[in-house]
Length: 328
Image (cartoon, rainbow, N blue to C red; front, side):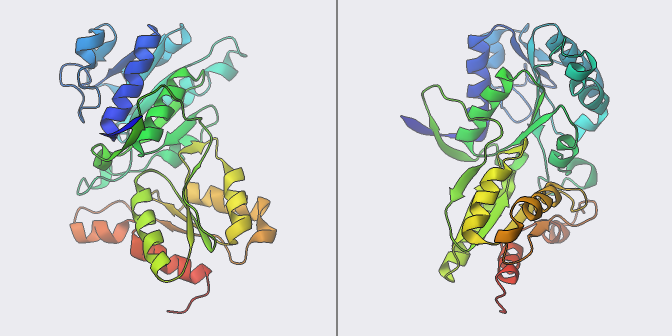
């Protein structure tokens, strides 16, 4: 049986189920306890698990990320919530130099089973310092796994898999879509890290995306269908390890690909995908892989500029027609 619940509720269910099953799992972060979380993701968890396992922290990301890494090295399984990944910049020393390198620096003696989670990407008029997209930042670091998904059912299954994983996992959510609803099974299940999902099957072009860019991508696919263009939509769900096998399989069918990526274009997830497709699927491509990214600048404040800055359905449709050599 499945029921329709919001993304925030699905993530909470996943965390709570793992905390009930394993007393070594705990949640820490700014306002996660008394305030029920900045976006109410942890609502009610303090009442159920108590202050020893749902821990409010000071506004000191470097400090509490370090506490989490130390706890993970000593056998616990922390979930560290950042109010936004923009604030995680202050904790990068712990993520990049400690969590990601614990296994290799200790020659396999210590594992670091920790989850860092919170919203990534733009969320309206939040301007330059609160609107960055962090998937490519984290995925560039060997030793970190990165998941990024806003489908409630998949997000629940992925957070459960992330908590059970013996490696550090960065989970990217969306501030705008915590209220986004979807069908979520009631029974126990996991979603594997490292496996993409086909959201819509098609034959003419492959659209690849992740996180909240799935919304304009699906809108574009529906509009293209009206014009006789059948688009296959793939939601990566996991950024690292990247499921390029599923992408190659799709290209063998459609022979064209457009990547929709909210991050900046230089050194982005779309750059990596384009490289892998020319390496592993070159003979199947009828056109170069193209991409739609955010503008190569910091996000402006003005709403008209925000709209211009981000990928949208209109830009995706235009790119599809370009790779399909349709002049109109």
